[in-house]
Image (cartoon, rainbow, N blue to C red; front, top):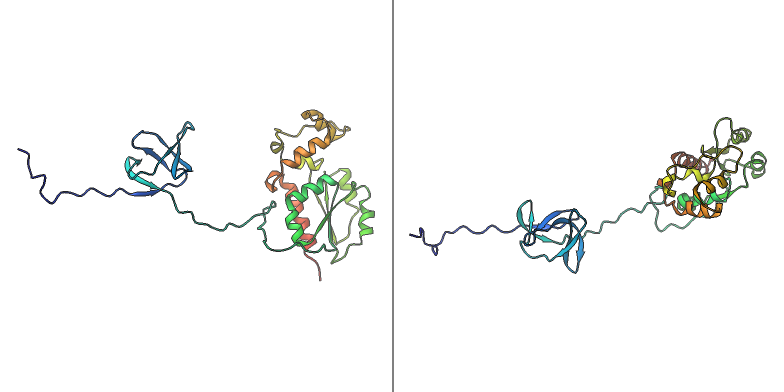
Amino acid sequence: MYGEDVLAGGRRRRKPIPEVDAEPDLVVEDADSGFCGAVVGWELGAVVLEDRFGKRRNFPLTPGAFLLDGVAVTLRKPVVVNHQRRRVTASGSIAVDGVKAQVAKASRIWVEGIHDAALVERIWGDDLRIEGVVVEPLDGIDDLAAEVAAFRPGPRRKLGVLVDHLVPGSKESRIVSAVKDPDVLVTGHPYIDIWQAVKPERVGLRAWPVIPPGRPWKEGVCEAVGVREPADMWRRILASVHSYKDVETPLINSMERLIDFVTVLDD
């Protein structure tokens, strides 16, 4: 009537429930409640799941309590392997730990003003300290040729100069053309001011405002974006820069060329 003896041997053994590491973003379902979500963390030994609506719930790691692709599984907290990651500087270079800044070398990099110097320090400061290269702000480049002559460049005393708005036909390009010393490299970017070399979206703008010729550019930008003083705008700009990814490529290329030039000295 009942078929084979239920007490007889030879019954099929229940398959063991597989254990699965609860890696971040693994999507599972709680078998009891039907809550389905991705693993987003841990709290007090319980796994935290987040569903597609952003709702989060905690679940204890009860054996066989979860479904993965419809199959019962036991979740376990994955073992954290401490991989030592290389630290990267703001310029994208591999950081050299445990090395003190070198004593300043004779070579220099000049920039047009204090804003340029602050931005260069923010991105390339670590690299320049390791190389022992000092960045010095000028008060514009109107007397660049005379200042270069006074610096007395040489094979072991090189000079790099970063110039704003270095485009064909500009006043800056005419000034730069007078500097012909082989131990001096002048590079630049096409932007009217170093402010404009920062990607506008980092500052919360779709694009930098277009300011009519003849009007002070910084003051025009401040008025266009509703900021009272250039100093306030500059603080906002500098605070938005954390690495080379926050500035435009022409500035990056120019600075990398200058650093290479002043750090490779002739014998």
